[in-house]
Length: 366
Image (cartoon, rainbow, N blue to C red; front, side, top):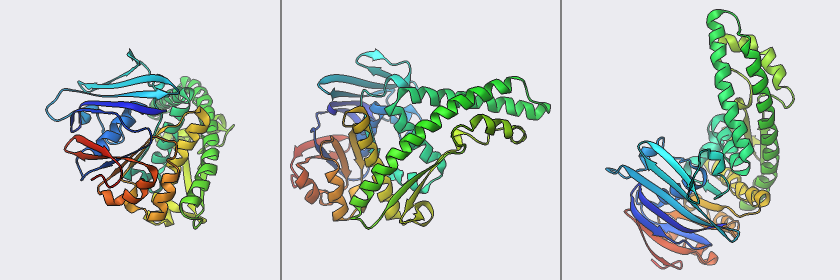
């Protein structure tokens, strides 16, 4: 899978852009705030209908404009899929091959993309919500069924919490609470099973990548920590009902799960250096790409935002080895950050300046 064409209109600081990227490595060179990350955001938006940076659709529309779009044409095993994300009036419209997508789950698979950005350091050092978000988004790309289970779980959780708050006010539980217990339990069991399977595969793949990227100096272990063990959801909801009513919320379930990252036997969140945490997060993201390749039979597009600046030469070389066979977009502020390594990969180099992308040539072109 690779992107044939990218078109942007009034997207962030891109008034108009049409770009036909290379099938291999594409390097975007430019100073801060010129549009490098905006391009990666647009590609990721087309893959997931989500932005890692914008809280609302309007934030992605160029200042003073009312409408914007991001469009990609994708070669998917010889077939061309076209994805368009249209932004207007605070809303986001999604189209695949000219047809409107009513449910987000129907978008996944048209374009697989894996993004590593500076904020992904939070995958290791932030709270459990960040790690659950990571698992959920990856699993949604891999399985539309998971997306719908997760969506229904969140709706059921909201309904149960409403009943818990009502029960706290009235001093007794409504009979409907049992119905939502059953629904939440069934959905939770399916979600935890999928997460456990994913975490096991992720742990094996990330451990191998991390060892190679660090030259064998570090070992990475990933441990899935479900709030409720599989098979015990219904029991947990029943046993904790009194506590849940007193707090007005469901205190256990899939919405409380976590992942632990352990480097050389120590919790990376508490004891890892920033460099170790960054490398662990990068290993996880590269694992995402390999898992998609293995499970879906297509190579995802890899988006690496400012990843080289804090890696030594050895780790850069190891990283580029994993981009082999993947269409990759790499951003960097300075050509010196990437010139030596990208020379070996035959990368295409672009200059990004004030919302325009110019030139395409080999390393050292600029």
